[in-house]
Image (cartoon, rainbow, N blue to C red; front, side, top):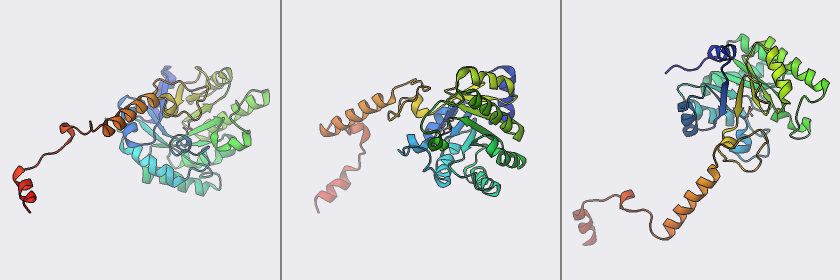
Length: 278
Ligand code: KIV
């Protein structure tokens, strides 16, 4: 099976085919997502919230990202896997950004990286792309700047903020990003900016006018209840399914109904007899 490439993703935009992206953080889940044919898998720093239980993505380090990304890459054969550059892993200097991108490509085996920001990170994006590494941009309500935004606030609502979003998107395109994520921005603005760009836009809380959509898998499967964002749609309620399975197991163990013979192993009776006679 051949892996999806950034050329396939560009072709999808230009043929008007919608692009689907989903997060994954471990081997087993990545294997399912990959088998479903999802072309883009993001190992998002959202794992800080939904997997590790932090309040936000800021505590997530490169080591944590590499650990999870390796597992996701091992679970995939088809999807293009994108490693999410965590907090401050690409801000200090271009050299630092390149060192961390190298870790994603060499240690974890991703095919691309994603980073947050527009005009202010365009120099980093340009250098990474010049090294032959595909970069996905990410603008709008970017989690690593949550303290600057003062909470989960919709971005791009005023004329100045809308203009900033457009300028950031254009800066990423000019720097060579192969695609850009728009997070929590008004749908009409995301549609307009999508029409102005030649690279694909992937929305999360940015309406249907983007070229594609991304969701956090724990939101989509109903596996994370601490905070359910307005942009998430629960296609399943795994918390309910898991809770009833765990409760049934608990009851079975207490009642001596688990394990049965089916889950047990036998041995040669004579070996047992010999032991008894000792
Ligand atoms: O970390 C993440 O999951 C993301 C998506 C919300 C795009 O950045």
